[in-house]
Length: 515
Image (cartoon, rainbow, N blue to C red; front, side, top):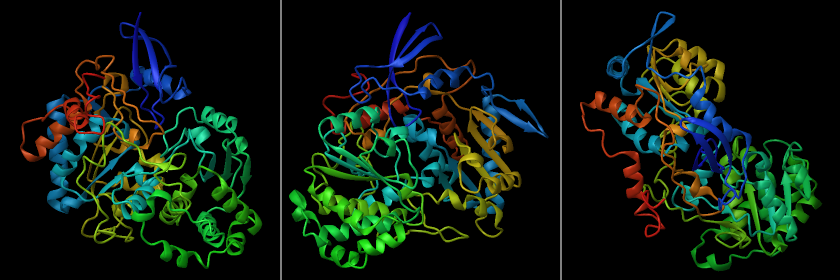
């Protein structure tokens, strides 16, 4: 028996695992009790790392559709067929006639994150979509306009706060979400043991609400009224405290003026939470030595998502709980997403571009997935007539899924990189099979930036890929070369990761070799 240590990369929590195996047979997947971030926490999803690999329905060879049947093809033929199909669509409908949809697993695969941009550039389309636009983009929009970079994300200092205000989030289930906090239940036990409190604002009695000191029901889509009323009360109670950030904050007086109409009485009419309770919430928040407001899914996936996230930051800022112990703090991850990217400072114009049909804003090179269906359905210049999906199933997971499915059926050409024939990939002309977690090296380059502790965990592939398969990142590199005439695959993702770590916050202590 051998023992292998790695991080689970199915979700944001990044739980440390101990995998016991004999040869290529997994004997057990257990929590790593000494992992400094997850602290021995694990959830049922972790065992799926093995299930992905051994699933009898898994696709392990390229499949080309002939009529209604699938036939296996070799990799050279599959890559050439994909490149020809993409260019055939673009020859008729232009570069933007071919779209791309990137699913959630890509955010947890550093190899994909480092090689997909090259492929998207080779395709040359601006019709790009991802699962991120379904839930988290308001956070990034608030960050780029308030702080200068979309990945400069304030994270609740969960392990040292005294008062946690949760608006529209259910971290007991999600283990954080834009606040990577595995073992959230244990951390709340710790909060309560040191005399702290968690207060939840949510339209339903969630698992998190059941563990809160207070739970206040709120009408959906009215969170902005509540947060603005809390800000109003901070000013009304003369409780503004900018702390150490006093000299670097602009717009406090403009904020004071902007929130004047948003009284607790106005908020009460919209939210269903009475004015006295709102005043008490504000007093408790400002009265706590260390407090932080965390607003998540319910405050993001709504008409006023961007406003909610901006107002949440503003509330933390004016109460002295921003960039402060026990408040909303900034991570210093080994892989520095902020320092390694060129985009710094808010764009001169926002939005930089709007979608062709509904005019919804482009952000960070992506249109909202909510407009994907209409962009395929609506004739005219820029209509999507071809599509590549990578580890995504928008028919099931994106807004207007049934419309998306109907539109996919009408495409001229579609290619999917996936491990299953599912509700989305069944409409593809070609499926290129991807590798799975235990067959790939793992290092989370995204969610360390959102974690409540700075940690770094790299593990190499545990098992070999199925015979005849190529690494998923190589699929993107080879297809990009086929589109551009290139030949060089470039440095491996692990080499790129090692280079990035050598330029991060902890360059002297962390490298792929050391980890």
